[in-house]
Image (cartoon, rainbow, N blue to C red; front, side, top):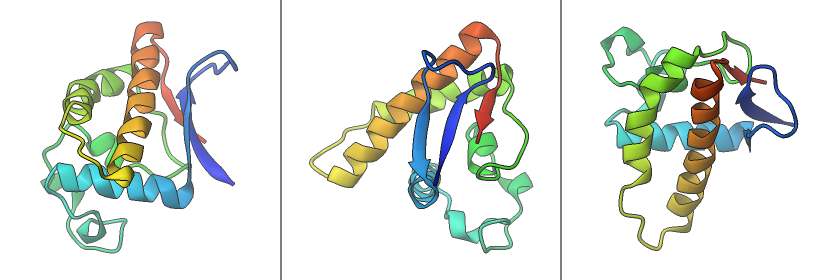
Length: 125
């Protein structure tokens, strides 16, 4: 069983991105590190640091329950896109794990762009 992020009003022709729960956790740990955060130190991930102390446009994605939480509005999706696109454009090198995260990130960006263009929320399920 895994986790899928997809546009509200999902149709099989719409883009989506999916992970195992462990894979999604690893993806978010990587994004948090890129943002200068240690995810395991954050509230909800075993730590005590409150999310209110974090200033990143990726907070709605990083501080979201895996599959039981509110959908992300198109405005929140739009606010995350510039930072996610900047991360995607970072140098890759030969690290296969990094390449995998960047491929997932590219799929996520496609889904977020769809949500913004069609004014639908991002659903976690």
